[in-house]
Image (tube, rainbow, N blue to C red; front, side, top):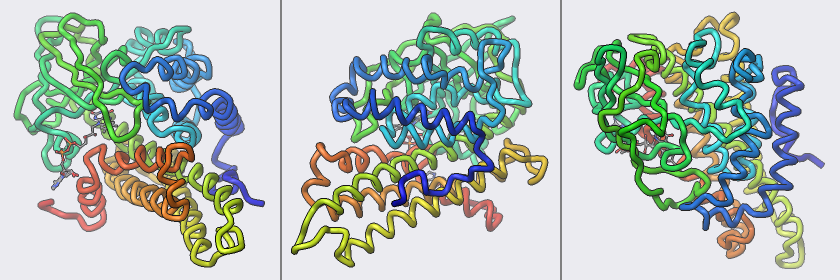
Length: 419
Ligand SMILES: Cc1cc2nc3c(=O)[nH]c(=O)nc-3n(C[C@H](O)[C@H](O)[C@H](O)COP(=O)(O)OP(=O)(O)OC[C@H]3O[C@@H](n4cnc5c(N)ncnc54)[C@H](O)[C@@H]3O)c2cc1C
């Protein structure tokens, strides 16, 4: 009888280490998280349950350290994008919001920790914290009150809507601005990767800056967590930077290269979002498989009704097709020697938007169809479809929303000139 392990995951591309890590996360999730996952929605504000679990994953299971160089205490895994994909799938199968909190800890650090563009000076300074015995969490702050999608729409707006500024004063940057919505903001984040501009209103790519700001720096303040539809394991708040001073070396790379490697992080954000959709759909598959086998309607198990078999079939097709497209792009991006484009190539950013759009539509459809056939039980908290249904909705909405994803995908395939 097939299981979730029979959906597409190319064995020749996923190393034994990464497969083992996936198994460890699954076992950890079954023992530590699934028994309490319905309580997490009540913990959205305090994170009394979530934060210790975040430590178990990021510190004890080594997810933070996986991506850092060995010289600073990391594991330095050779296939980081494959690892992200498996980790996201496995964590999202347990809880999509928890997955977001965990993986966003390292998302904003991609420009300085991934080869071949490591900034060893910054890795040496912050790596031991991420790889140490205490919980240390990163947070990638892009979105602003006046500008969410427009900041990510660099291809057209070229940074001119970014209002958070970085001004060089001797050997220090002075940061001023207001961000919101970032995963792990508020009391969770210890280090912010701040998207800012060195020249407000400019469209010069050299003015786009990625600057690290420790959460405890003077002038940083945060608001209260927002209460959301789902994803309660991820805390999102306002963050204000008021004349915050950080050393000049905290700019990740400098003019031009900051933008280049941020694009790469956005591409990985789309891959990670897709893997989250796949993880959620795999759990939906498990839940409806059990439910439609055990629930008897009109004298036979629900799954033996042809109209239900149609839904069951559709869910597997959504998982298989999303997985196949996702793994193909993961492979392409991981092998520039074969495919010819660097991971920070804008074409990958545009192409992966199409993938993440498809995935977010797939997971939305899978949750909704599963709920249709579980009836009232699907709508009840107890059976977890309801949780996935609420959690998944934002995957299409974040990172610029479905419209930006649609436009950027079309931009790639049709060379749009105005949109
Ligand atoms: C759970 C969660 C986690 C998040 N994590 C992070 C994070 O880690 N870091 C971070 O910085 N932000 C984060 N966000 C914020 C999120 O990425 C933004 O909300 C998102 O980019 C959209 O911005 P917005 O909400 O301001 O919508 P707006 O920018 O106001 O967009 C409104 C609508 O316009 C559409 N649109 C976009 N471009 C165009 C166009 N050219 N033409 C027509 N319509 C367009 C959008 O798709 C959307 O439907 C998170 C949000 C949530 C809910």
